[in-house]
Image 1 (cartoon, helix red, strand yellow):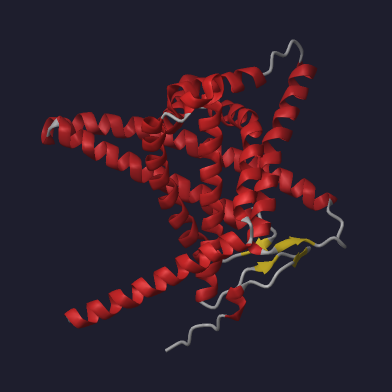
Image 2: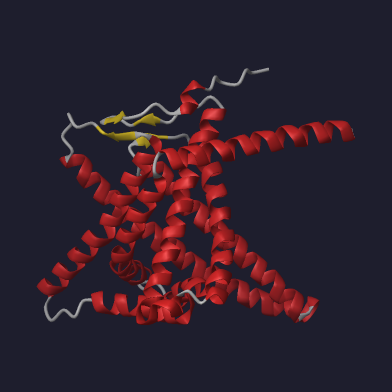
Length: 317
């Protein structure tokens, strides 16, 4: 029995290392570091309209202060209070000071263009990682409109998940106070923190999975999507904690003076973009190892041959 466990452990370790190694190879070969830099730069400017729309949509159901508090708490854990203040200023500067319904409609339109444009950049980065692109012989007007509609849908999904996160956090807080009378406040507090962490991980996995599945010009099966999204979410969560620790003790922001908060924010977005694209490469390698290919969607073509295409399907016993 012990020998079987050890043998399985060695096979699992070799298989995992092979996946990680090949995903990293593809990450570097596809120049994903440069794509992540471009995505981070674009996201920085799209963050204000995106947060404005997300908070505005979620505020239809709960108090805006609750939504803003949830967003601020997530950001403050990484970039600190000063960084959150910088983001808040960016959002405030983009909020509509409309004096008429025409000005209000134009402002909302500009916000939508800025926010959905970020998803277009994410699509381009995923296309680069998976070696696909829109077919230049096809007409892309309808496809462009569809992608914009899909981007708006993703904004609504983000709003709903943020709303669910706020409601679940409130419910867990009430439940924790009730359990504290039975198991003690310290144990109850630990349980609530653990539940919040698992809930946050599930939300991040959901968002990564939907992005991998819906945005790129490539078809990937759901079973491969969830594995890749789960791995990406775990790496993102662990990296976020390490990055927060590093930012706190390295005092990077102080080296840039007044621009320090903006530098920290850009560094965090760049890290998140690299993890996201590495997760896309991992998803590709995972699918290929199991004999499943990522194919271009109708209206798209492959621009490079990926090594997973040479991987034969596993024999069925």
